[in-house]
Length: 438
Image 1 (tube, helix red, strand yellow):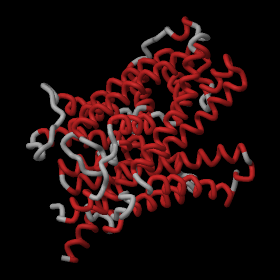
Image 2 (cartoon, helix red, strand yellow; image 1 turned 60 degrees about the vertical axis):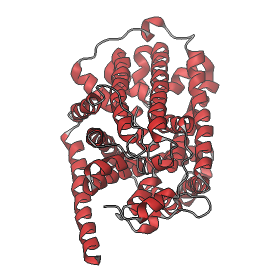
Image 3 (spheres, helix red, strand yellow; image 1 turned 90 degrees about the horizontal axis):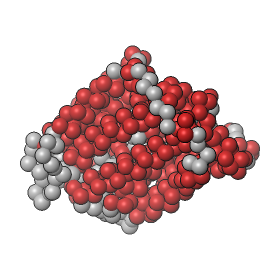
Image 4 (cartoon, helix red, strand yellow; image 1 turned 90 degrees about the vertical axis):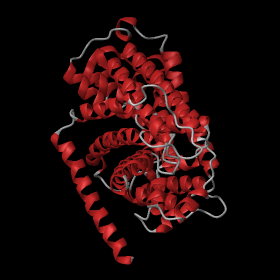
């Protein structure tokens, strides 16, 4: 049972995100630095069948995002998927979902800020190592914390700016490169076989995820029942078309050799039709894209700490709202500080597996939450997103989650299982402490 304080705390936030801002946040969270390398990784695994994996992932994401829209139109509290799961299944399952989300977000953020710092270090060697390298990390997170504490509107404006900046190099790559593709390579699509396609989807699916990040500030979305469905479908449509065109151009220019450039395939392809300036443009675009992910992540992910404070999983100080700017300032500062420290760790690559599997577990729980929420009466005054046969989408989402998780190795699943056990122990301890204080 939530305390009377919690809705009061939630009510201090400003509902300022409309369809354009939320869609931009989703696109910015989804189109990360990964799209600058994934075309080669997928081509190395699937060859000419790579476009099929993109289409299969897009189809799966339609099912997932429909389930999120169903749940999101019925839950308007800050926390995104965490809030949906907690509302549907209670505090324990909600806490597990929140922990999984926090780990995936903080690990991705700390790894990507290290990538940004490495890029700056390559351009200015004085920042390449030691204290100066960490100083870049602190400056990046300090800037993002300052922008987002000053208001959800300023954070949303920053997302708009960086989204445009990161998409421009990709648009140039497509608009110019399309005239240099070889039709025999670009349009040849071969069936790679079910096992290879399944593993390829497991890899590529994470070029499409990011909606779970962008929906985190759901307590600051205007008219969630209308805004959430429209924004996620708009963003998914844009990213699917963008990804397919990028793959077709890269494949049409590099052909069978695309998989041989795992670190910078788009830069390699651009050098064929724009020379060295094209290569530098794509490398710069990858850096901007990495920074862009951080902009969206800091706009969104600290809200899970706010939600934990609101729900008393963490000290209530984490649910503090800035009296002037009406933003969760303590949560934002704490998130940025933790990510900055983790960026010093060399274990991020090993923990990236956890991020991948945890996202699918989150999607599984969120689809289940959608089913549970559909069985309840909607909140007073709410206009839930619904249509005939809507129930089949979260059911299919659960099935797809399990099918894709089956492609994971025992080690990958074991790491995630360990985290779930630790989270469960922490929940039991936290509940015991709360009961003792009563």
